[in-house]
Length: 417
Image (tube, rainbow, N blue to C red; front, side):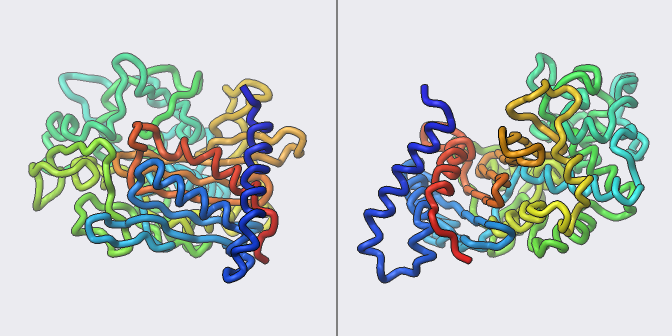
């Protein structure tokens, strides 16, 4: 089996050769368009091969937007194409955004990463049937929430992810509406954690909902407007917003979502509560995802956000020290780990490129949506957003597009200035 490096090199050479063979017939297009043709080729072929309704791609290089395009349909039934500025649910790419908000509060001395989360979570636990709060909840720190080591393991026998169980939470808490982020945290505060906090990694959406409550307590503001003002507006990405469940409540720029499995469920939101609807259109509690997976964004806004860290000394969001902290390996990571999960980002150190060279990325996955945001060590950032989550073979789209995007980027020989 070829190594990743050999495969990337050979595939990039093949793409570049194909591009060179077409240049003679491309004189009616701008040279910038021809130079970036590997992205055109990849995405047009990818959506056709994987039966994807629509997609958007944006790329920055050295802090400048060099490419933005929509592909396929934002709404298949209305033959509405995807615009470069179309907005998509980004799912768990919301986590790096929340992480930056937390680190900003650390910078100004409002909180410390190793503070107990419950120091700032001013919610009354929901205790059913005489339950008691697990003592280990008091040991969960902000850093552990950021690094998915807080003690919650949805894959463990008996464990579960509360974001996927809105009906259960509504029934047990006797709620008349879909659970809010506060409801979910209160509900889980009455459940035992799955392992001792800080001892190992297990991906947890709950930890980021806890961080959302910390932001609200410390700032005295609601999560969405505070994050938009302090994280998104400084990088001109304030067109982002938290998603809404019902299609009729969304903005015209937002795409239609297509669950690859065509699943349905009872609607969680008035006035259609209880009606059978597609999962992306009200049967999933998108309005409760918030800090862990609720944001809606264009691909352009996402690369504006990620390129804010291209030059650590000039970032409009965080200091150089905070950026270093954001991408530092967690205590549990093995020495010289090939990859690890830091504070809100997956990280891959680049061997031989110096201690500060790394790729950082995050993907997102919910019914009707698959997304990926990549910040490469060489000054490239890209975001790829899809309005379905899997191929016709059931493979997650973000995983399928990841390596080919690196190949396409490496095939570009001349970037526009």
